Amino acid sequence: MEHSTEVFVGIDVAKARNAIAVADGARGGEVRYLGDFDASEATMRRVVKRLAAKHDCIHFCYEAGPTGYGLYRLIRSMGYECIVVAPSLIPRRPGDQVKTNRRDAIGLAKLLRAGELTAVWVPDEDHEAMRDLVRARTAAVETLRVHRQRITSFMLKHSRNYPRKTHWTMRYMRWLQEQQFDHPAHQIALQEMVDAVRIAGERIRRIEKAIEEFLPSWSLERLVRALQALRGVDLVVAVTFAAEVGDITRFENPRQLMGYLGLVPSERSTGTTVKRGSITKAGNSRVRHMLVESAWNYRHPPKVGVKKLYIHEQLSPAVREIAWKAQSRLTSRYRKLSARGKRTTVVCTAVARELAAFMWSVGRAAQPT
Figure 1: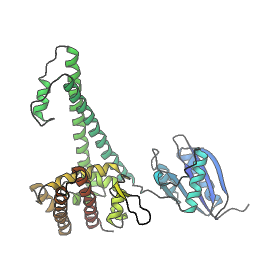
Figure 2: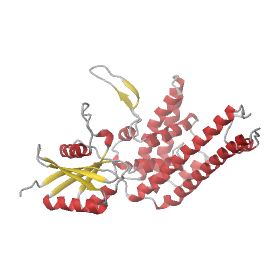
Figure 3: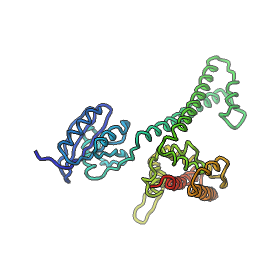
Figure 4: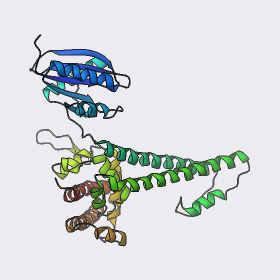
């Protein structure tokens, strides 16, 4: 029986079963739905071998999702091409209101054959492990924020106002412990919330210690060390940036990195009319939020502090030059935008966009192609 020498395989992955469709390589060729298969490694290996026995060239794809990159690594280890597709960039017809596993698999196969899919960057297992650790810290920080907010609301409800401006210091925690309530239930509730804040803080410190421990064995350690030369970029920001962005050399220019982080302005232009709005906020929100927070440090005049000076001594002259150029440029940018009456949030976002460009330059210098 004749068969196409080149086929494109679309896989709609799920927790238990994967739907698989095959499109012949010829334009307008046949598209076949193979069916649902068990998502286990042994079953998927048999399916790949069965397809390989019938076709000379096979291309696989599936959407990025909660199932991770195990299937990608399995197919690649067997010597076949596979891409993980960005779900937000898959072309969809506005009037298509029916979504099933079968239709998704067939659609992926067709779009892969047409070259309309955008692949995401897939990290190796060590990089993915470090990224999971960084995201665990992010989750711990969010948990700490929630617990603190509960205490603030509880104290406000009982008209207990802290007499000083700075909260969440050791003095503030001691003030919380000194509060007395008439009903024992209120006292127990406050103590439980205070203990939750303490436990969340300890969890963050443990994760940060683990990050420092695993950093020397990470392939991007050199990039993390170099990024800390920039003002407002400490170990946590540098590790988060490296873990989420990955190989920075895959971006040909800084504008691509800005677009990946969603820091470029949106645009609605037609003909001679040009309309630009707020930033797109597409891409990785974790890095974008941290860069905006780091941009707040550029409200001060350019200066290399004692801690940064020690870091600079361990880096190359090229990286030190980029870091100082970034300080001079971004502090001036912050002052000019503030003088024009721009809101602080807008100023920090604009500075964060240019900070991403300088991080790209540092990454190129520390991690050459």
